[in-house]
Length: 246
Image (cartoon, rainbow, N blue to C red; front, side, top):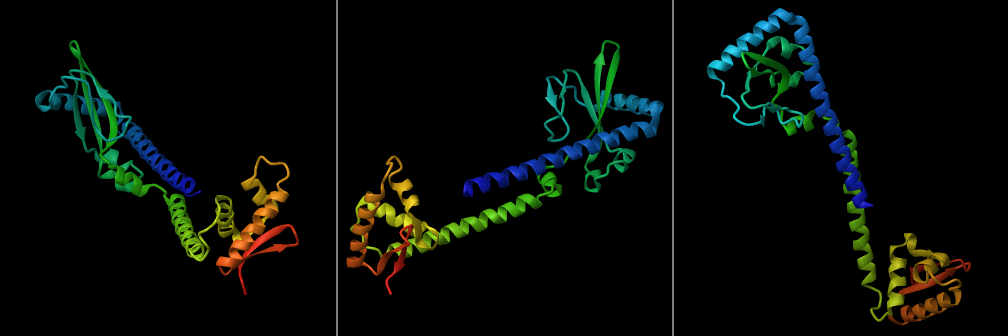
């Protein structure tokens, strides 16, 4: 149960993280589309020419394929011979809905030469970290699951400690079958077990284990009576309860 809660908690946190990252990517794409719409074709063309002149003057040429921009796994690879210029465009940043993302956002101009011409690719990017994405993601569900996992772990440890203390007062001269039955009693709610529960656990392949059950209970009772302050009481012939002797 603990591992199920742990896996569910981690999965919930990862899903929330991925949703937040995708939301940031959509925000950047939307802001880029609005920027192109606001500036118009002619102004974007002038920006591209300006970027080309700046790149040909200063930016290094890509000698092999490599990625650029943010840690996003969707960052494209640069073809050989390409140059990239990053520009912090105020209009682009204003269109970004996530306020904390604006100061990290920029437009990346990728210039790729083709014979006597060149190709310009513009893309909205942002230098954000994994911690930033996690910080803006909705972790409420994973937080509650984490608290539940910790609570379950502490409760399990407490039950084990209680069972260990109670087990220390029980005689150690038990057969393996008696040992297993005592462990079942100590772990059961209120130290109570039905006959069917005992038979299913100790003799799962036996069609009628009633006689074997009576013999095991009788011998365990005798052992407890001689060596401890515990006793086993039968309740209407349907179940047994382990309790301290009055």
